[in-house]
Image 1 (tube, rainbow, N blue to C red):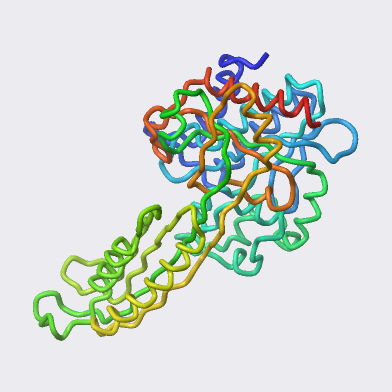
Image 2 (image 1 turned 30 degrees about the vertical axis):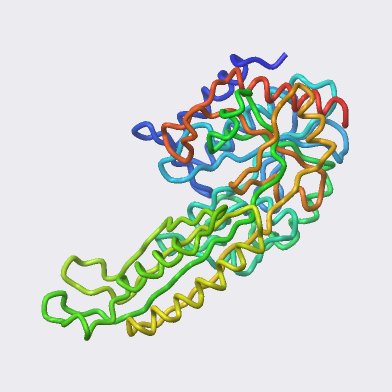
Length: 388
């Protein structure tokens, strides 16, 4: 039987890793990530599973014998100053599922799901499924100028083998992922967990505006080439273009020289756009490109608008969803990106979201009742008993 106490005991030794002032920062390819990996290995050994790390840096706890196996898991990395359940809850519950199942079940912790350090979300699952632009990913740099390739090598993963990562998918028959709900959608149903129909379409864009640095006091308004002012107008245009059903967020802004009395010469803005209809998302992109070009011309600046990541969304396996719902769990659409969405393109996959009464996520205040998590994990175990 999977209990809240079992899950709490597993989380107890993971939660201190990367915890500072109540917030969790456990970025991929860092010492905190390595410490979480040591926790993963200890959980695996305690459950009689053998530990492996594949060519993308994904961590596996494998049953005796040969595969392929059904897998359960999520991720261990976090955003900066995040919460204690995002990703971690899914891996802890996966070990509880594997320990209580009469079938051989593999546990996986996908590498760099959040993409917080190198802007490489769902890195491990994209590499595993062949959806990763390897050259682009390895060349990306963090805030200190360290490339992803260098960080991987420092973490003991050979970046030269990354291109061959799809071969490691052969060990997987299918995947179930448990995750904290990052909205109030499940809570609104009154159920302890919901079964995900699919993942919404999503796109991550980077806007770069290049102007001319100048004096804030002596430069007349009509003579300015202000990168930040134009970027702000483009952001407002993006929000105005967000028709019903779309969710558009300017999530990160960097400006240079970032001085209080100097007009900005360069500003970059990361825009996140999501919606249930990929066609609507493409229309939003086309409209934004047109508006951005007009605003850049009017503001006497140059600009680029490029797509860093795009997905038309995912529909999860109908049979797995039906089995997970047998206790009466509701179905919900998920607007977040998850590793299971990548795996679903190549293997049968499904997700459950554990009720989150506040809807807070990616923040220290996120919270779930572990009794709800135990109910969701039990439904996953029962599903695996039927299909494995």
